[in-house]
Image (cartoon, rainbow, N blue to C red; front, side):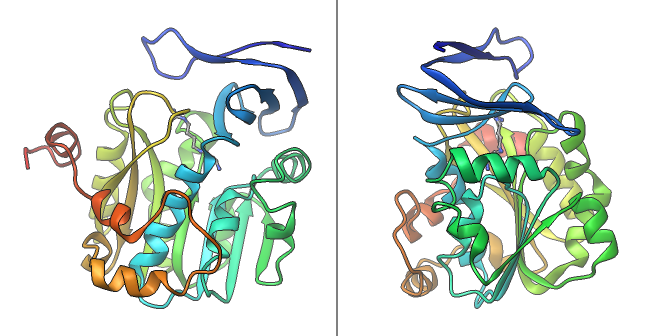
Length: 288
Ligand code: AG3
């Protein structure tokens, strides 16, 4: 049945929305409500607790930038963890790298099951979940990381916004667990919200990561369905190099990728670290 979906995420803003032709899936799990719509412009749209998470039309921008930037910032990544990411979009991108292993730690099995069935373009018709290099762990990442000490070359935090359950994934304690699970050269990435409307999210997460002794900063990606301009993606590591993209190295490493990218390129990677002055001021507390 056709209808109209409206989201209300940013305080003070009325809504954003889209028309849909059909609701393909709808359920309530112990963790959240899940809905998948079919919309004329956006294609299939995944909505969790009333907030748009990803759409077939523009998911590649978000997933490529969240995954390739940390993985390309590390010399020879072998082991990767994805926190959340049950739709498989980050997994599909990570598997383009010559890595040995990915742990996908998602709390809600229904996100994985419904995405496998209704969002096949995100997970390569389920093949991303079934790849022999992948372990799908259905557990709270916070709990999992407390109990399993790992050493990861990249930790990719593909979370919902910091309201409700996902708030824990923005806490000092969670970032400490991530730090302790990073290899010496490793890099962490995390979505830090749309900076114009979610003004202090990036600053808070960068400050928390720096308090833990990590080099931390943000880079930018404009994802149309997270409306309001640039999204800030956080990046951190023990090594300052993760924040300083070296174009020659990136071009060399890029050759090792299998499959195509539609948004990411070494040049886009380097450019995404250039911050407009107002964003730099919000994140760093000073003008560049
Ligand atoms: N997680 C990012 C949700 C962003 C929500 N919207 C916003 N901040 N305007 C997406 C998960 C996709 N794998």
